[in-house]
Image 1 (cartoon, rainbow, N blue to C red):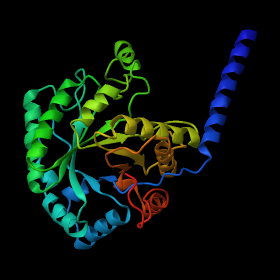
Image 2 (cartoon, one colour; image 1 turned 90 degrees about the vertical axis):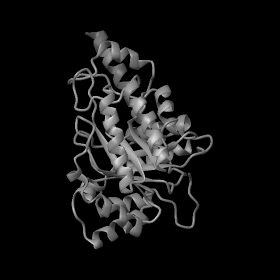
Image 3 (spheres, rainbow, N blue to C red; image 1 turned 45 degrees about the vertical axis):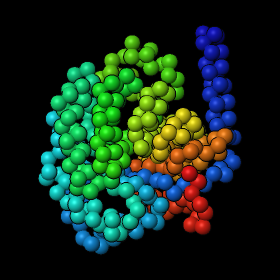
Image 4 (tube, rainbow, N blue to C red; image 1 turned 180 degrees about the horizontal axis):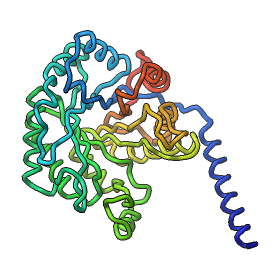
Length: 337
């Protein structure tokens, strides 16, 4: 019993040191300002429902005020066979015309994805070549409608997913041929690449208990070499304090930009919602953490970088005001990225 008590006290002491160290690290105000290369995930209603001219004009104003350069308009999800029923995007052309009129220069991308079949669980089977071909035909429909790019969000995607990489190769050929962009949303990278094979050996890839689909360094580089833009879904951190949550955003910002910031445009995902089981993560914490991560860079990346706001349907005017206060540089400054 005595040894148990000593062990508990030792663990508690280590935890206290971690919390205290994180709190001290979190106090200085970041020097880095935000950038003018930023993205927004937008709700499906923009392509699936009619909108008035005033609503489109308001959207354009919002994008301009908040320095949004890319909008991922939800246009799917894919059906299991790789198609999207036309009725789901019947107002896409009107949207594209409105974006060009009221937000010139903003790239409107078709946000498409689905739950990927893994070990027999999921919706869309990317291992099926016929399904991948229909996905490409669907992508072509959206590009022909006037979208500036294709934004993929298939989940889960593991570091050894060859079918996904094949789809990325073929999609890149398609978007290049039509003068469009290819962007992709990925989970936050693994903290230790060596842990992924261990997780794979010990845990299944589906069900309630499964190993996390975290990109390894090699996988992230390979995706970055195929994509024009990579958005890292950095949110849902589930850490107990604001300083630890901020450290999470700072760490992933620094490591991701160092790893692929010279290869592709990077958007670090930030939440404008409060996760159900997380009382420490919010938009100001995320933005401050990302700025701290930028401060830690030895040099800025060669490609543009910024944040991806998730999402327009959870961002109220007060959240946008907090975003503008913490992130975009003043209008007289040049972009940081």
